[in-house]
Image: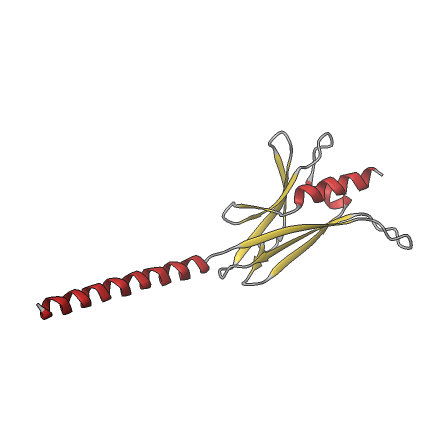
Amino acid sequence: MLEFLSKNCIAFAALVLSAISICISSYVAYRDRENLKVRTVFYPNENENFKAPPKLKIEAVNSGRRPIILTAIGVDYPDRKYTAMSIGKETGGITLSEKQNYISDMDEVEFVRISVKDTQRPINLWVRDTMGVRHYAKGAKKGLRLFYQSKAK
């Protein structure tokens, strides 16, 4: 009887150890991926001494462990269409390593280059990687709305 219990304890301990190993492997696999965080910040023209146009700052940070290559910045329109502008054409995109960031200041000239539709205003902004995944920018809808409101003034 004692021999039977010790065999069951060893089997149970092996089962627990295997379950812990699977959990650790899953966590490491989850962490070992690309993870791009994109956000936008609107900078209005509120300085009386220096007349600068309003800008929309786009910041993309690779918070994952794998490098990610950014290929385009794009905008969506209300009619479900989009336009995009390539970035890093000479090098095939912009490579972001772990914890590296990419910052772009979009002013009126940049938006004219990216948005070819004069009748509609963009409603959302995103960054595309080489896998074709669109990473939508946090705060882009509000930033675009403020950008075009300040441009109308």
